[in-house]
Image (cartoon, rainbow, N blue to C red):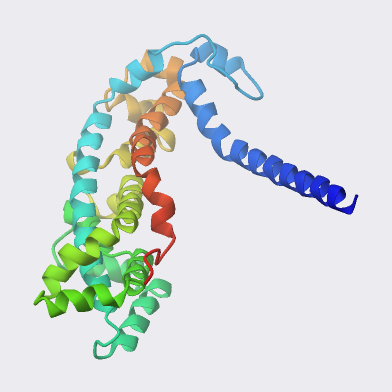
Length: 295
């Protein structure tokens, strides 16, 4: 009888935990679904609707047609893709090299170097000194200003360094006995074993560059170099009728679809990230479990 009661209690606890997780998942997913459904809804009915939205109100693509007529979106897409590809390439190259060096415990001043890296995660120079450095390097109004100051993320560096430290030492020692140098060990031994972690860091860096808008707003002066997020900000935050119309919107369409266009541009800006995640999902759990390779 006691075993029966324990079994019932165990099932009730699992049911309660599952219910809480389900509610948490709904709270996380529903805002995205709301924006998605609203972007396909009729603007007049959407303006009159109150409460929760569980499906599009009279399916229509008019909002996306109006959003597509905004030329800045496509220019921003091109600039953002260029920044993401270039930035992630620089990020991964420097992060891998730095993590490999810091993972060598026999390295001179190993502890001091690691403490210095951790120090930069909690303390930074601030906005004005950083701007002065960027200006002194003549990077203002250059896309490099969006890449070089954030070339290495300290948290990502620590994750990768820890993953390398947890690798079996026998693998690198065997490679050294066979005459392999550091470059050979890094490229042919270390990197193949930490691919899940690298995939996760790529996702982190992609999201970081894709969502970044503050640095672009500070350093970029030419609209031809604006990333997608700055154009999206104009529509969502400061996109009044006059400013938006001057960038390609028809005034009549803007007044009619103003709210709808905001939902559509939000979906257009977030869709690429949502499409990338499923391809990296299988690496995500492995990558965040640091040190999965054991002796």
